[in-house]
Image (cartoon, rainbow, N blue to C red; front, side):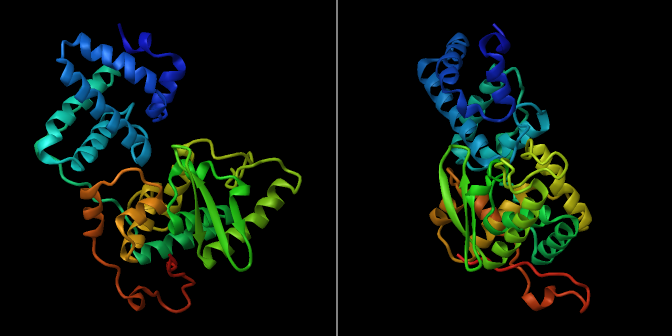
Length: 321
C-alpha cells in the first residue's frame, strides 16, 4: 500500500508544509504497521518509531529546512544537521530510523554518511553586515525596516513572524514588547529594545495609513500590494533575499541567519543555554550546533565597523537582555 493510500490529502498537505508533528495518530499506528511489515523486531520498531518522531519534532521546531519533506538535497541537509547533534554511537541507528521514515513517505532514499557528519555552522551577520541590511531595509519600506529590526532583536522564527498579530505588539514611548506564538502553540513575551520599539511605532503609523483605521486585518506584517498576511515562508524568504541583495551581502539573506544572529548575541551577553532556549522558544538543545555557533569570531571593536563620515550608514544596535 502506498503513502497516498495511507494518508489523506490533508495529511499530505500538512507534511509538505513541514508540520508532521500534527500527525501523531498516523505515526503511532500506520508507521508502526509499516515497520512491522518490514519484519523488524519489536524492539527495533519501538526504537525506530521513537527516533523518527524525535527527528520530525526537531524538523518542526527548527523551521530551518522547510523543503526537507519534498526536496532531496534539502532532506539530506536536514538529516545531516540533525545527526550532528547526536552522539556518534547512536548516529547509525538514528539514521536507519530516519531512512525508514522517508521510505514510508516515499521520499527516500536518504544519502548521508553518518561517519562524515560535521556540525553545521549557522550563518550569522557581522555588525557591519547588520548595519548594511538595516540600511537596505529602511530604504525599501517602513515594513521591511520593522521586519528586519524585529528579527535581529528577538530572533523570531518564520512562522512566528507571519503569525504575529497587531494586538501581539505592545508599544509605548517608554517601552515595548512582543508576544510570539511558537509552532507548538506556546506563547512567550519578549521585551524590545528602545530602538526596535521606535522603529515598530513608525511602521504601525504607516500600517494604519495603508490599511485605514477601520481595517479588520489582524496581521502585523502585511503585504504591500494586497494588504493581507504574508502568505508563506517563501514570501518572507523572497523579501529577505531582496534586502540581502540590496545590502550587497554576497550571500542569500535568510530568516535563519537573522535568528542565529540574535541567538549568538544572547549567548555572548552571558545568558545560559537554558535561558537562551527559553527566549528563542527552542524545544531542543543541539550541543554541536551551539558550539559551532559560539566558535565563530567575535565581532570587531565597534569603532572599526564605522563607515566614512557622511555615508548615512547605521550601526547594528545593542540588545538589552
